[in-house]
Image (cartoon, rainbow, N blue to C red):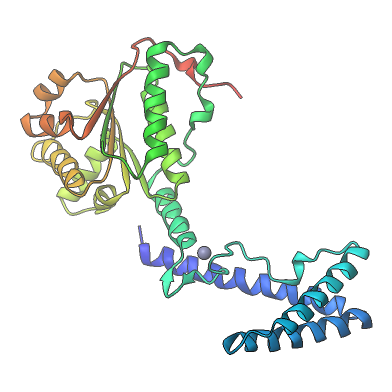
Length: 306
Ligand SMILES: [Zn+2]
């Protein structure tokens, strides 16, 4: 994943967006100006507006302000009488905060960060369309799953102001673990954050490739705002790789206060037996972790049919 290239692409697109928006309003105005009445009044309005704005730097001229507002009303009335769109007089920027420049007060605008995170998320996750909490069919859920879903939804609503940064969603095959994991991914992406969603099998493979110096995608997983690991326990244990990198990922993310959400079929005892004390203690730390136990019944029907 080439972050620099993504940023450059976004910058180029913003420039084009901005020019298009400005050209569209200029063309609109020049068409309107073919009418002499509009041409006169609009030109006069711009002269007065400029005079007024200049006066604001010294002593605000309230008479000029009144005049500008009167002219504005005349323009509006003219456009209304012709059923024309008055908002098209100024460029329609997608982001009104930075006016599609991508910069506010010398800083990158939040719209750029949001777009960047969206693209990073898309580039790193093979699965692009995550399901959402809207797809939950609450009516047919049992109490245990309803409660679990509610806790997870509340966590998402509170994110990033959360105290528990690890969630373990525990349940058997078909219990809805992956579905809920996707719902969380979807919510966090909506908040403009960079999400990495991997099965433990995929993560294990990325760790192996990293270990032999063939791919560095693992570092993106490490740095993601939220990392979601599906199906912990289904991966093969590779010597010097699986346990070492898993510990490293979980520990580094905890130190950096970055959430890691795991789905698994394993009980805490299984985790202790399969991995080791260090991983076990990171994943079961009561101050940092939420443990969600799903009802074990197969409920592939939990998702609403649309
Ligand atoms: Zn912006």
